Each structure stands twice: as structure tokens, then as C-alpha cells.
Length: 250
Ligand code: NDP
Ligand code: 8X3
Image (cartoon, rainbow, N blue to C red; front, top):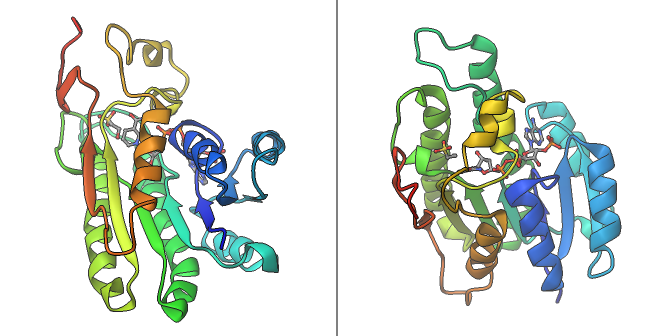
């Protein structure tokens, strides 16, 4: 039977590329994001390949999350695969000058948003005793870098929550794993630097990961046989050795 995947943050970057990859493999899609027009355009494109339903909500708004997920029509309300991808960094400041609004945004979206969406979807997986959850963490969830403080904290939390989910959902046969990328060329830096032109230089001088690279890895993880769970994967571009070491001669 055809599987259904629920992808948060499907309007750009890794989430959009993952939607495109899964559509190629004939997986039904529920695509989420705040930018409604983009969702509609993406739906029109991907409907050529598979069934698509869109949900327009802010993951940080717990009531909107549960209302949106409860509104799914019968044809889309059995979710086999949850990809918790929505998230961003907001700012790159030392802790002593960081902005409370940026900190709220990162904790509310990257951590609490992931929890709200998971809370609304996990019960149907435990009843069916099947399902697969992939949380998009980051190399910033494994290593803290200068001025990364709260973003790194949010992604360390994503990793801890992923491990906790895997332990608690183990009796139900539900797979849980994290995909942790290093530098990926998406709208991430535009958001982090709030449209400042500094964002244009982040991926200059080396070949960063492309969102499609992550999409292929995510499809690989979800297409393993039932007894195989990719629990945790760290992905860098060849030029990157750690959060702070990037070889710009490559
Ligand atoms: P993008 O900015 O391109 O995409 C972020 C996605 O998240 C968008 O679709 C955006 O949709 C959605 N989103 C953001 N905030 C909210 C919100 N409050 N409610 C609902 N959706 C939201 O960045 P990436 O593709 O790079 O980021 C995807 C994930 O990958 C994030 O979790 C990020 O932390 C992680 N990551 C990124 C890396 C990188 O270098 N790019 C490296 C490691 C991890 P919309 O604005 O329409 O709501
Ligand atoms: C995104 C990777 O190093 O830009 O999670 O913070 S980094």
C-alpha cells in the first residue's frame, strides 16, 4: 500500500527537496509551512507525480498544530512517515548580546514546534504499532561553535528528544532517527541573518551540501527494510571537517 509522509518546513530547502524526492517514489505527501502561496505552487508541481495535501500553520502555535492535523481528510489521515524538518537559526551573536526574541524563536520552533507536531501524530502510530519519525537535527546538535549558543542548544535538544522518542516508542516498533547536516545551501542563512547580505557569503568559495543531497539520504533512511533503522547520521560536505573548519580551497 502507498505510504503517506508528513513533512514540516516543506516550502523551501531540505523540506522542499525531500518532498520532491518522495514524490518521485510515489509516496503520498502532506506538506506544511507558513507560506501558503508557496505550498500551493509546490502542490501543483508535485501533484503530477503523487497525491498531495497542504497544511498551512506555524509549528510554534500548539493550537494551530493540533487543529491542522485534526483537519486532515480520511485519505491523508494515516501518517506512516513524519519528517520533523521545520526550523531555522535566528541570529549569530555571543550569549551576552543575543536577542530574547531570537532565542524564543529558536526554542519555540526548533524544539517546541517539533514536540507539538510529534504529539499530534505519535498516538496514531502507537495504535497501529508502526511508523517512522525522522528529526532533522544538525552538526550544531553535536558540536557547539562560537556564537552558536542557543541554536546549538536547540539542536542538542533535538538529538536528546530523538533518543528519548526512540526509547519510548521502541515497544511499538516505531522507527526514530535523526539526520544531522552540516552546511547546506538553502534559505537558512537568509533567515539567520534576517536578509542581511552577509548571508550571500556563507556558501561562497566551497561546494556546500545541496538540499537534494539530504533528500536522497532521507529517502534512503525511509526505504530500508523493516528491521533496519538509521538511528543517527551526520553529513558534511567534503570541504567541511567540523562546525568551524571549512576548506575554501576545495
Ligand atoms: P530553510 O530556511 O530553507 O527552510 C526552513 C523551513 O522551515 C521552511 O520551509 C519554513 O517554512 C519552515 N519553518 C520555519 N519556521 C517555521 C514555523 N514557525 N512554522 C512552520 N514552518 C516553519 O532552511 P533549511 O532547509 O536549511 O532548514 C531545514 C532544517 O534543517 C532546519 O531544522 C534547520 O535547522 C536544519 N539544518 C539546516 C542546515 C543548513 O545549513 N541549511 C544545517 C543543519 C540543519 P515557512 O517559512 O513557509 O513557514
Ligand atoms: C546548520 C549548520 O553550522 O550553519 O544547522 O549552524 S550551521
